[in-house]
Image 1 (cartoon, helix red, strand yellow):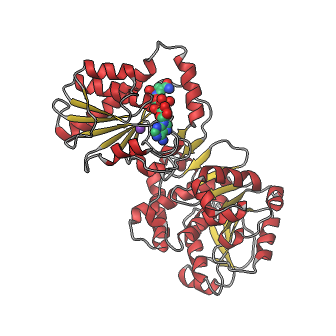
Image 2: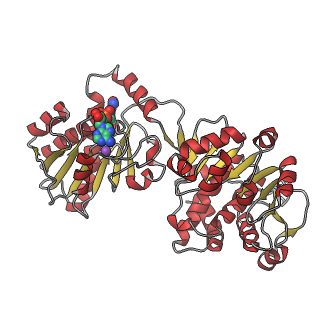
Image 3: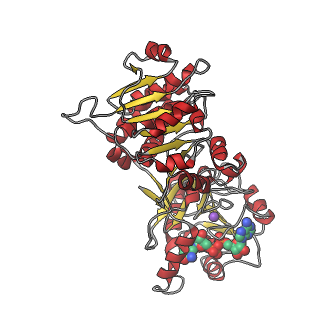
Length: 467
Ligand SMILES: NC(=O)C1=CN([C@@H]2O[C@H](COP(=O)(O)OP(=O)(O)OC[C@H]3O[C@@H](n4cnc5c(N)ncnc54)[C@H](O)[C@@H]3O)[C@@H](O)[C@H]2O)[C@@H](O)CC1
Ligand SMILES: [K+]
């Protein structure tokens, strides 16, 4: 599991550790880790550090201090290091002295001949996007030169991944002590490039954000054993599709058939389309361990949603099924419930604008989970999964922008519903489902069709269980 911590938590852990260490020790640890990553990149790019040209963009705080101390280390190994300050009056004094002593220089303009740019403008103390002085430096980063961000790309909000103005886009981010949520959540995550974590010895409590990795997913996937039969492996029921949207039913069944359940049952008006494509499907009402309700239902089917929610099977509610949900009904349920809205549906469930959900996705998914007393999977460029009473929100580290295509959400609902039927909790079914769905989409490449994602699910499953 990859874990991430808020700025407040990181600062508290830093204070505690700093009190036990000589002054400046933490920054020197951070700078040593940063310099090692930079040296590795230079060695790969040029064969050696000696003689390479390194540009440091230096902000007013300790983030700039890290860059300066790392620059001093690279200068001692023979690199030509130039520091360009955001504000010449405000540079970390110790870092600047170290750089100068190592032979580095300070310039007011960003040199255009460089082998590496180090972004030390803002770290966890940054608020909002870059202001004009920092933005002007970021704009002058020479094209094609690799950028290493110090702790996080400047202009990205460390706690939320929001990018509220100009920001740096890095190829590599060297982060200290702990991942920050903004490195795992878009739009920040896609600004960070490959993230290296440098251990500086922090002692940390429970994380605020976590991301599953292959081994976690493999541990959660319900693999059949010699004594399994189809009923023990769980039956998932799909209530989806309408005369207007029969395809949603087919795609939800396609996802469900690849989610490890022993059988998939379909209830609704698209049975002919479903059977034509998947003769494996059971048709009509019957006992299930989990229901998926909502994809392509259209209007006027609230009674079916109410019936399913009144039962004691696990339920995944998606798309049209999410309209007008009553928090009291969901809170009264004892079996797992998983809601899978996109931002627009989440906005309607919370009674706020879609923009406010997009701007604060982490807060929105937490509020939904608390209000509805259910696990909630918020779809988007980084899919988030929260469940009431659990501190950590799961962010999905797989996926591709090509997944923003018609029907891909229907496949995800079927898949996650199948995992619910296999006995996973709402949060596990949602986050494991999103993980496999994202991997399958990556394997498919783009432009992709939703049914191709479903077809790539078995290979994605094997990727995690037999990497
Ligand atoms: N606290 C510690 O123990 C450690 C901190 N480290 C580094 O220190 C960083 C945090 O340092 P700071 O707290 O000094 O914060 P920053 O270096 O992120 O910068 C904060 C300063 O930037 C200014 N600022 C904030 N937002 C701005 C914006 N949008 N545009 C322009 N200026 C803005 C503020 O006036 C503030 O003075 C971490 O990210 C990390 O790189 C590391 O050295 C490891 C140890
Ligand atoms: K930075």
